[in-house]
Length: 458
Image (cartoon, rainbow, N blue to C red; front, side):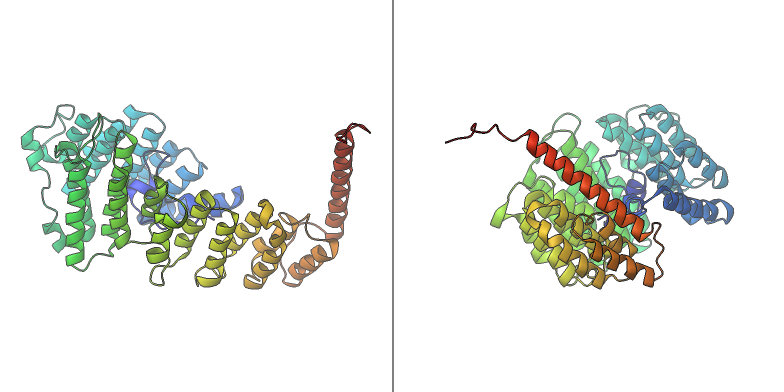
């Protein structure tokens, strides 16, 4: 199961660390072999490079980097030759190098982009923000602040000097006015203000160690901006969701660098979920440090009362609920989560991937193994078009189905005109021989471990 609900942005298309969410992960996992990966990569390449689809260039680079099908540096340079003013491509390339540990190369990519002619203020701010984030990941708050304040400088001649109060004051102080126009631009200004507050304030209201900023001041700005989005009827806007994702990532970095209050993390992520209940990032962070189990499980309560209710119920939320039970519950609570998803959720009833996951979970779980065959037959009734579901008979369940059942499944596939790359007689013969060898090996092992006659307890 690879469903996730995340709003696309450079932070998730090109995460600066492997520990953070990657927007392309579900797509990569859904493509089951190298041929499919290469097909998608080639299609994106043709659209972006040969047909002038600049809007797909960023997705092409993100897909290739995530799938590791091509060298990220080579792909980025080829796209930048085609689109030399695409700021998101520069950010993607810089983050690729940063993740690889090539910090100097990453910085060179950003500084090269900052020297492009005719950069808008927003483009400059976007680059400065991405560059500041790299320093923040390393716990270098002073450098992060200097880089963020580049938007207040006339030139980049003093980018290594500490940020002065004058430069700080020149940076965006109130994203309020921007909401009158473009919500996406407002989100960018708000991100910069959130990070600026984190790097400069000293409220002392939350625990703070070396390499950490003022998380309370930063989240206060997030709350204020959320109120503005809501007041202007933009609470569900993608720009608002991206701002909250940025705030969630800041929470994660803050927690990773020193002390924090679990209750504060829970309060903030609960607030984010109030706006976007199915967002995978917010759900994961809410459950990340949650240790309570049983009837007092806050995560289960949130799922039941908010996330899995009719207005918000979706495949990504159900996948999260199932994974939560796998981690925190037991085989029977996990089975119940699967059943609720596949029987109660309209978006999951005919989801072939979820049915396959349920079949495999039952087969791999001792208590549920007898249920695996039953689940398989339910799955082919719900997804009669899915070759993936039918092929579970010849993979996951091959030891549980007899030759007549396998022939029946094979015949159904044949009648549907589905290509199967093996003859049934050949498969059954090989399957029986493998089963005979396994039984023989098991008998030999049982004989070798049998105690000597008279050697047992009397």
